[in-house]
Length: 311
Length: 286
Image (cartoon, rainbow over all chains, first blue to last red; front, side, top):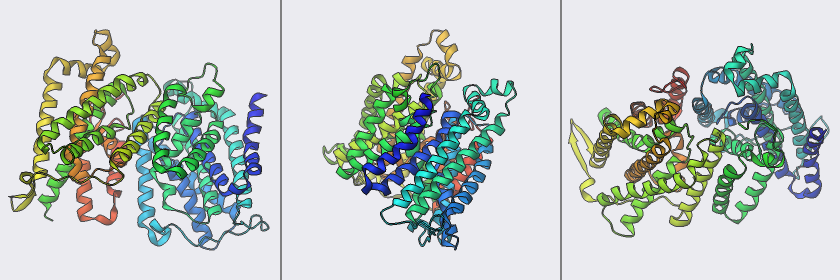
């Protein structure tokens, strides 16, 4: 019952934000996009126990696919997101297969390496992607043929919220399914999981595909609402940021992504306004304090998990 | 640029990467600690060197051992105060903590020394070039390589020949067995961490000229240090040495001969190597 309430609160909280801060809707949609990205990462890190430093690869792939579609004459947003999610999910297959056998450190470096390879490719293929200047000239058609994306970001926010809710429900469904439980079994002990008949490699690859597809959808929504794709959607910085957001919010809890993204991006917005160096310094101190005082994140402080191992 | 010049540039770069990453290899191998903030100790050494020379007028050759000491003290204090409490924590908590340390160190560098990159004025006898095999070799690069080779020999002798080295190898191979034999692994770790930070400090001071020094140093080179350790195999010295040579020479060569590919070749090779050797070139299966 509490879990359902928490899920409902998680879905409704962004609406309260929209009512309370109607002037910051564009920023709000960015928070929702980051939250969705963090949730997709949680499927991998928190549930399947796969540490990755290259999650921006999927996000960026989704953003570029959606961006390129609309630049080249297909600006319909919903199909754009679907195609982007499929493309990112397809990218998850080779990466999942490549990293299925590796240890934590090797996995971190392989995923990081692949993300950097994609970044460099997008950077060099300036003729297609716009390179360092970003992909310009996106024309996104009205949502459902009726609602045009406005400058104040009302439709954009509603659109980002709907995607977030769908992604959230999908992620929650996945982790509660027998498939999700088998991922947790693999996380806790891959050898025993294999011993009781779980196809470890296949399940981990499937987890990669689902997570990548959600991340790709998040990237597509960002591209469509901002109508531009900057190169940093593929950057290592973004991969690291979203991992920090997730650990900060609380891993293996689905809600952690939203809470982490809201706090992190809110604090970033506020403190960077004062001075970028302040932000970096205080962020650092908070992260250090968090590692000692709240190793399982904000969610861990609020709702300790009985008996669960926080990995 | 002749081939031999590129090769020597690459070796100089590789020796810096190796001397900075050597400590990281030990701490990762010994405690499986994911220390993303290792570059911060190199930064301490670099800033100490620049500050000592420019503000206090201490000669360069005296600043190198001082940078070694200062970074070592930083490492010792941080290990005793913070790091050792997180050895048993999960990898992700360690990532959170060390990313925090990275941010604080970068912001502190901006507060103390400004956001710009730091200039260094090498003494005249280290500037200039030496002719060798029809190639002009920068004296400073040669100096760097010779110094690092000397340090590597010292390091290898300590690890191979001393009692401390034997304990260290034992603890890397099997920490539980080492504890069972009565080896004080915690103390071992403190010493290794301090020494590794000091080496990184020396590397940072040496690298101001070749790698550059600004507040984002630890972020910028983080991937390279990790690359050297993970591709080489955490816990060994030969592996990171080999990996540093691969990374240094390949990166320099691709910058000279194929600048349009950027770091593409390097990362492609890294992914390929890690897929083929998941535990690193000289790593052990865990």
